[in-house]
Image (cartoon, rainbow, N blue to C red; front, side, top):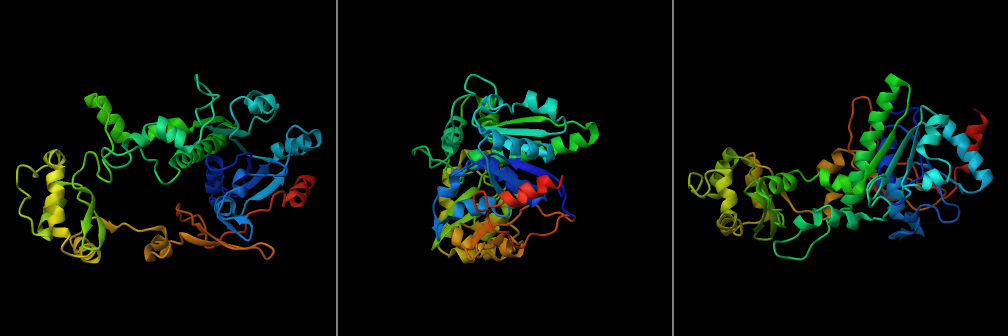
Length: 381
């Protein structure tokens, strides 16, 4: 039995942050019912790339969920939604603040009617504050939250992080809040309201930037791949590509010097991490003068033999073939439905002794494709 077996999630969200959260909860055993807009459904159904007319983006986030299309302004659909609420444990939504209340499904109304229901809202700027009503996307909160100011090469243009961390991190915090509320409900019998802002989440993950700015009064700038407070901790050129070297303390740096044949471990310019940070540009030149003489594979073998953290910089095609990734069931096939296309999706990174390992994913739902099954479930009480 999975940890969340028996928990039902009503997911009114679309695109990424909310669906990412419900996807995680589903991997932990919850049943997820997507309540989608009639006609169009989740926006990501129209996102490329497509296989036989179906979105791979949608499939990777929504595989195994159920779909019912409801217009929450139509009386007949509201009646169905009200019945779903009585059977649900968690309601997730990502409308702009105030929309749910105008529809009659605000927290005050729902908690009075259904005291055990947990309501979770994810939005760009949260439910409170002067900018609560403003729209936001991933890039907006990466910019406003400071992430883009530290991403990219020194002196270069601001760069968005390649993964949609504005949405994904908010989805992770939303999941944590939901799990905490479920645990609390077991003790109190009452649900809770969870308010996660994408902007808040961007600040929460920037431990170094906050520490540096508050301690020195100067915000950090972009440093490329280099860590702002640990050296050497960056990418270095080898003869045929790049290798990551992460020597996180003085003993590791001493071992690195042995591997590279550099007699600088006790040099005052490099003997401590603080000194290495002050002289990072010089140290990088000294290291690359050596690493350029051999291949990435050579340095991976040599560094790993010395017990030093290292990696080659892989593209996604290489990642999907990585033996370690494959051994952990992190590349899964999304089953085809009714002769439709199959897709590839990430596996579940949460490995638990009480959680059956996921080795394949069920098909992503067709829009409103589970209406009959959901209505039958409601009829059976």
